[in-house]
Image 1 (cartoon, rainbow, N blue to C red):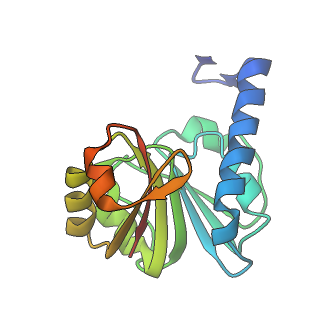
Image 2: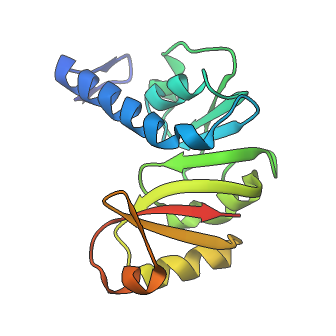
Image 3: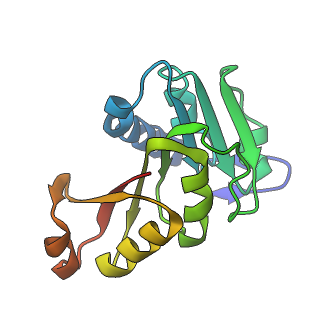
Length: 172
């Protein structure tokens, strides 16, 4: 992929792959979303997922460190693009129902937790280890953590011994 200051250019293959990934991600998140939900996507990039999610929720916040990708693409009126520094989450406290990122950035956890409403859920992925992840999430203010491997929910004791990448659902 060639990225320039003037324009973002994606090959047809990259664009198609990104669209397929966004559709898959939305399918996995869909059961957590409703028309009164506020959704946050961290690392939104081209906003492919955020644009899709906007049709299912009241408001979508799309956060990314790059203004280039987000600033050049259109979207529905309930999609709010926010450029941030990669650490702080510049959203109102207790304003988000569901948050999502493709990869975990530990330094963002306190800000994500502050932005989530009580009972809100943050979905992400990480390589582990489960013990350190659990400590980081609880220290940031989350109350529960669910681990998933290959789409199956697994108990924490099993997550501790597996080396597989985890899909996580953290509940505030």
